[in-house]
Amino acid sequence: MSSKGPDRDRIWNFQKPEYWNDRYKQRLYEQADVFNERKFDWLCTYEAVRDHIDPYLAGATLALDIGCGNADFAAAVCEAHPSLHVTGIDYSCSLFDLCGSSLGPAKQTQWLVMDARALAFRDLSFDVILDKGCLDALLAGFDQVALLRSWGREVTSKEEHLSQGVFNSVMQLLREVERCLVPGGRYVCISYEGLTGRERFFTAAVEAGLSLTLVRTAVEADSHNFIYIFVKGPAPAALPAPAPAAQSGQGVWADGGAVAAGSTGALVAGQEEPAVPGSSAPGQ
Image (cartoon, rainbow, N blue to C red; front, side):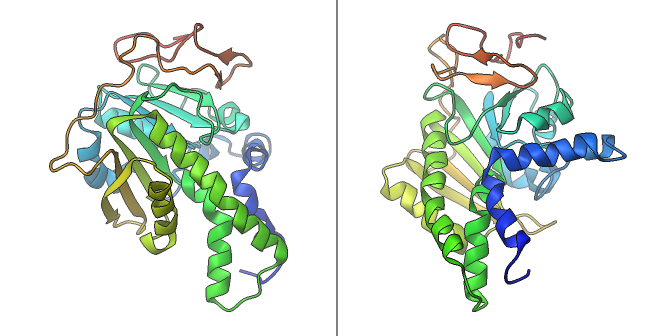
């Protein structure tokens, strides 16, 4: 890593939708072999972590995959859990132009353009929230600053300012995760960073009043990524099934709405709603 230069600036763009739009557009329009660019699993595959996370998916019927990207992760989860419906969100419009509907089985998945820090779902909407690298994308610049300091390298005033601003962004994400989980629901966070680099944020969330209890940490063997399992509420003596999501009959949408992948309209309360197991998804 150079002490200065474009790479150090670029990493701060990971938390901006414009960066990812440009990245996916490049793959869509400039790559000679576009097909091979349509899928990519950041950090690890589902197979690499399934033994660690499957016990926490048991009994769940509605899951949210935040920052889904162009990974096979949600599709693999659905294949292993036929009763689970996964909604994948990403704030890059270009991503879904690249991937189309190829990210997962139509009966078990749907894809929406949405920012994980401002979810357009009602409270208590999901049994499980999956996060494979979404938190990392927000913290990439912060992690770089910490690494540079550990090496005794100079940190610019711009990097210092940006690093201080990351905290609010992370808290927004964790608040939305906690809000949208049912009591007993699970937040499965997969990260390249160990607990030393993440604990300050997890602790801050609890101190801010968020009911997210870290019940398990693990390391997957293939690429040595870290797995953090949170339960909404106090740590259970034994792992319970989560309370059923979306029991109100009103669907899971809040008034804010969200743009469906591949469309220009907004899905809002009172209009089309995401499918739940046993129903038909819009347009399918």
